Length: 127
Image (cartoon, rainbow, N blue to C red; front, side, top):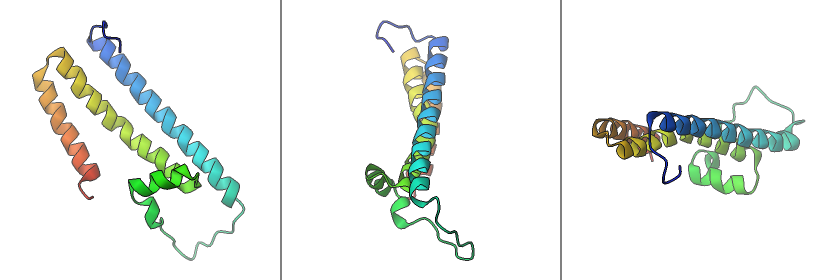
């Protein structure tokens, strides 16, 4: 937002809406790119449904996903898109803290900080 813009409820709602829209569109685009890469490489492979193969270990943590996304491995790029989708509402809550603080609404800042803490703990607590 511009520094001279007043933080009204309408402005905050518009920014939040645009933030959510951009996050979902970006994550959908990244998943689509990853699916295209994956299908171009493995689209004609035979599938064996008798054997279950879970996700490899490198796709189970953020570092591995980021590292393999840079090498354009299809499944890692898809996982990156899903991480972006998960990060979208978390970013919304973080922006809400900033917006409530700018508006001077301490009660909502406290409640939103509690929600943000719970979100972060649920996402990062098992690390």
